[in-house]
Length: 331
Image 1: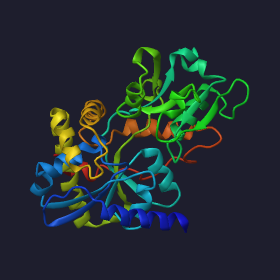
Image 2: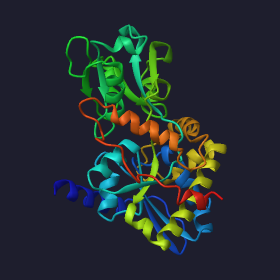
Image 3: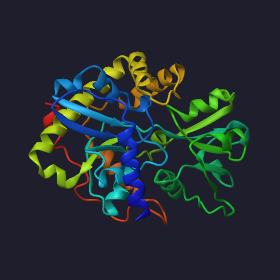
Image 4: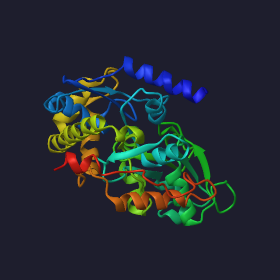
């Protein structure tokens, strides 16, 4: 019940803090996975450039945050479509929230471990007997799967790693509480750099390079809604306009970052950080036309099922994605 109430409250907060609108006859509410930043530039660009309006859509973009779980928001009726990472979405589906991936604007993963070079770590084999900062709330599963594949225990025993539950900052690395911390290529890594540790003193391990990457920032809807032709038509137009926004953002990163800044109601974002973030995000969306690549999906599922004693999913999902929307949107 507490989770349900939290989700409903999150939905209410999101409605109050929606940051962007485009005028059209049909309404779509999009719940972001995190706060307003260049990670979601394609949607803000689509709104600002009139791409949604061209599709006769009014799109309400709701920023996320640490207390907002997109699956709970959509389950509570607070959004038509959400952005989520596939591990979280598949875990939610297995627990009874029937999410379906309808589009995948992000082709590559931006997740990595960033380590201080003075720890002596030069390869994943050196993680043994080290302390590693890990995000939880569903973000820990790619890490656990990776360690499982390396046969490195995560219980702090000799020859294993000690897992430090990391907040959404890099303080454990800066304060030398952890030898490595979780970072995104477009965000926390640069917080380390901006804190005064140069790249020459860091070693990074990208999940993408390690073969354990999972899909990030896909678009998900509730399965039953896909039985409604009117909803399907709305999502086709939404995905088409959104992908137009993403490709515009890739080609015009500085302008896209500026649009994001204009929509940041908190005023917390800076031009330097958002422009740099947009440059990194463009590397992750490059190569995707919005349609999910089944091979990427299969790799994600295989990674999640290798999660050792705590896999994020216990069985191979069925009907967790569809090309129903993108096959019409991307003609």
